[in-house]
Length: 66
Image (cartoon, rainbow, N blue to C red):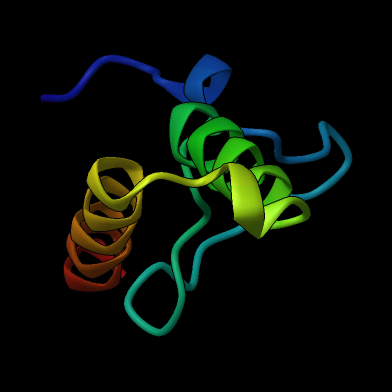
């Protein structure tokens, strides 16, 4: 049996979320990485080719998870 892992998510304590088959909650780590990469796109002229490829690879990986 899995141990309680609610600390990994940003769900409200007042909510019981059971419909994970349709759309599961994101891990805090996935949320943090997503926000960091969105913020990088605010200044696209600072993104080098290597960074661009890393962002695209991350976006594809995140789509596979969800």
